[in-house]
View 1 (cartoon, one colour):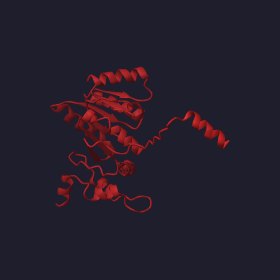
View 2 (cartoon, rainbow, N blue to C red):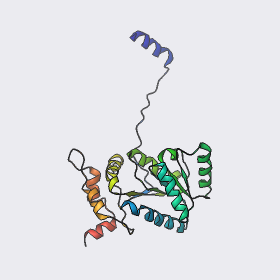
View 3 (cartoon, rainbow, N blue to C red):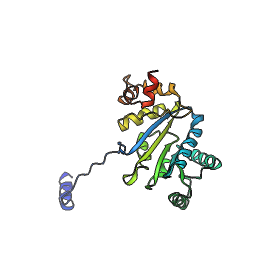
View 4 (cartoon, one colour):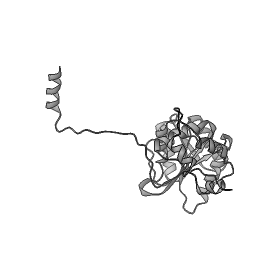
Length: 232
């Protein structure tokens, strides 16, 4: 059997090349990342604040908002439309033609806000996306890298703002371990929850040791505004 396998290899394998595929765990340098600690009920008003600032910017760009569930994506898109922010949801329950039409309207800026789940956003490559919002943190840390990679395409700059409520603290710890950095926290909004931020900074691994991300968050990973408050 072994000899047969060797002869088969010699016959069909001509100068074989070994390819090693490793998961993408690093984030683009041109993406400005921020994490917002807040209670879950304040996520929607904070999202509307971000969208309002985005629409008022001199150079208006497209926005992708990520929801963990299809129901959540539908509900959020409906709420944003009612608030005056043209949005459309794409997810696995939409047909291929529906997703393609929604993506075409998004590219043209007719609906400048796309509310998506992870599966539906695969293959979305639109260079005009200037803001990605993780309304729900993904429970798979690698998905965070894929999500925020929808901005800062083709050498452009981009922003990625993530919301973290109490039940998502563990997701954030895993994300920071995966990307090997602490995401700077953003306190410049009305709903910042400092106690959640401190809990995250004190977060420990299952073996009782602190992760390097948590150490950075407790020390040099804070934003300038956070450091100023700490000295008061």
